[in-house]
Length: 120
Image (cartoon, rainbow, N blue to C red):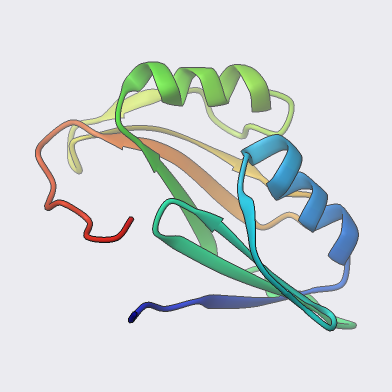
């Protein structure tokens, strides 16, 4: 098995973990002391409990259809910073939001064929 994990420091460990599990729908991949690694398809994100937070990241969650993006918008409109719209430059349909610490998050679908993800 090969793969990768993006690790981010968080000063609000429980709130961030709950947000991504309960609101975004990620699942726990692995728990360690002061670390939780969450999964969404082939995306693994580790949140490490620290005194400071990494806030410069953009976490992008992608879906198969516009309807799935719209469903996420309906579920997360209270934290959305934009409405869903088509981006013709990148040929995606997306919206942006903020997690409990103010980290940027994006929800999108591709409007063109993309390579198949093996093991996703």
